Image (cartoon, rainbow, N blue to C red; front, side, top):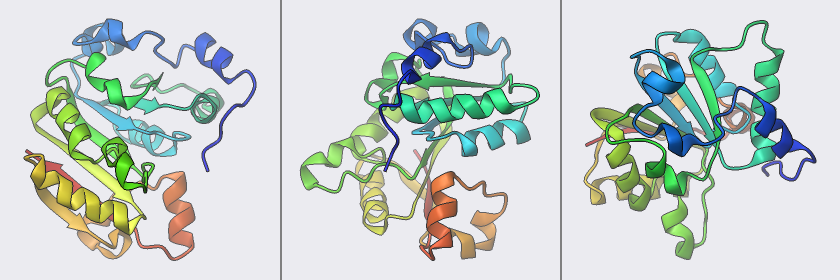
Length: 215
């Protein structure tokens, strides 16, 4: 269950320099106006408490990262983790934003890679279009992702993963690699960074599924 409604969370987000407040103003200009360099940009949609994307940013200072989270009280945890660092990560910023409108904040082919980790499964059929690996969202990613860019998706939800595998080709994407048991796949698991959810679910014995898709 995601954390919600922590008093003061939105005030913290409004005050911190780690969050971009009006991301639509930077559409097409993230490299020049936010990061002030020409490095590639990777984004995580649904960053949760930030463990995954913060570790990526630490390991890859030559890449710019944007962590996107819909819920203020969850994003607050990421901000707190950043504040605990001796030196904040200059190649990482956060946004509190609903990914449904992601084409409003990133320009055509502005993003090099997209990460989706343990996304809300929206189990009811009528909510299928809200799932982050759905064809509707893949169409949105198609606009902002460079032509050689990829989407990486991890989940412990087998039904959601099978849905994602079916949606990709329907949306015109090709499944580059996939596995139903990431942690026992030596090639795909090499260098894998676990999210908070991944640590919890794998400790319970749940196999982790992953795919990488491209156009």
